[in-house]
Image (cartoon, rainbow, N blue to C red; front, side, top):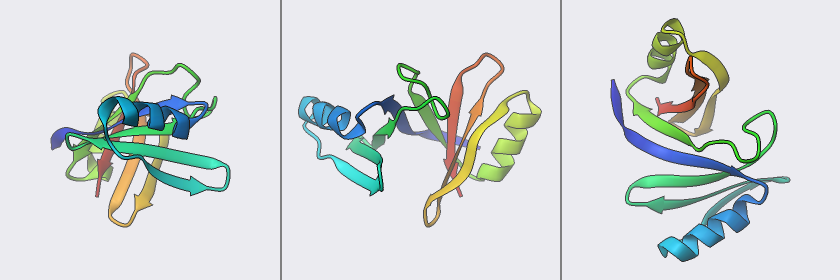
Length: 118
């Protein structure tokens, strides 16, 4: 059901600036997705997406923890299973790109986890 982590998402006031700093440290190119004032920046490091999302009180407050996304074989099934097990909805499911869907749940201890899959 679960595969390896696919994405570690962090939240920053300036996602592009954060990504460029990490790009310099890790010697990796920066990728940007800009939608109006919203910027998502990311690097690919050893097969894992290191993402930088705009921080806000709805998604994850400034200084919040990174969100690790787990690759799953069926997002809806695994999401339902985790909700039944005691997790609660945080955001999504969202279609990020064709064939790529994500969602976030909060476990019973307050940790936000991400799922990514079809």
